[in-house]
Amino acid sequence: MSNANAKVLPLLEPVGQDTAPCCPPLTERPFSAEEADTAARMFKALGDPVRLRLFSLVASHEGGEACVCDISDVGVSQPTVSHHLKKLKEAGLLTSERRGTWVYYRVEPSVLAAMGRLLTLRPAA
View (spheres, helix red, strand yellow):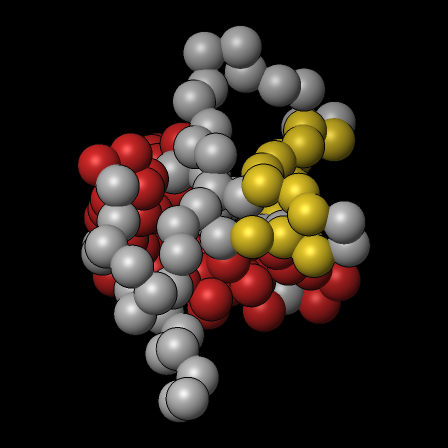
């Protein structure tokens, strides 16, 4: 079930089987204002320890997705967990699907690949 008010940042652009990051690697060229804004939102969302832990729990969960019931024990209340998951979704880092009474979250492999490429050094000449 999708939320019509949810904002998802355009982190990736499909290119055949591969994906390109929202932004070029930092060493390739300076970011445009739009690229910097997109990358900053992504890193800001991961700048909170609880969000980073939740993102890690989802990314490393068996099968590539996790029920909120499996990842909610991070030392904060359930409403706070929901708030942080919402922020990760708004930054385009997580997707979700409601199944019955539970919501399942997943990190698309292309998002992890894009994050890795953003921080990749340019190959030496």
